[in-house]
Length: 138
Image 1 (cartoon, rainbow, N blue to C red):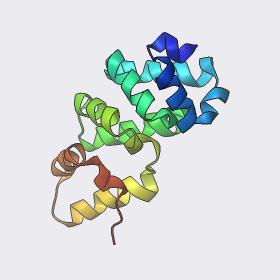
Image 2: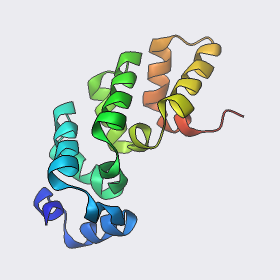
Image 3: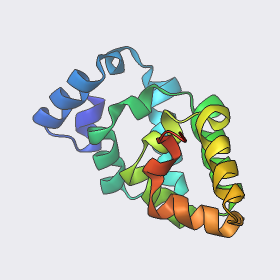
């Protein structure tokens, strides 16, 4: 019901549960609502939140405190402005979910810096092409 209250229709709810059945076991108060609140606090519009969750419901299964916030903060510290970060998360939530800081993001940032890019250029590269952060370096 909560997904419908967010604005999802029956087919979107069914699709989200099919993609991520564990969604049914997530705590509403401790997991789902805090993540949605965090996304809106970042600056994501309700329609973006809805679309992001409908397309990538796995986002709701990640730890807000241990995964989502630290990754988003690290990207922000790198130089990705909050408004850009919101757009990137809306289109590529995998960047803050599935990509590990140590295993994916930091090595790729170091690789880009090794190519002579500074933090500002690296941030622009991530914003323009987020999938680069989970591509193989080999």
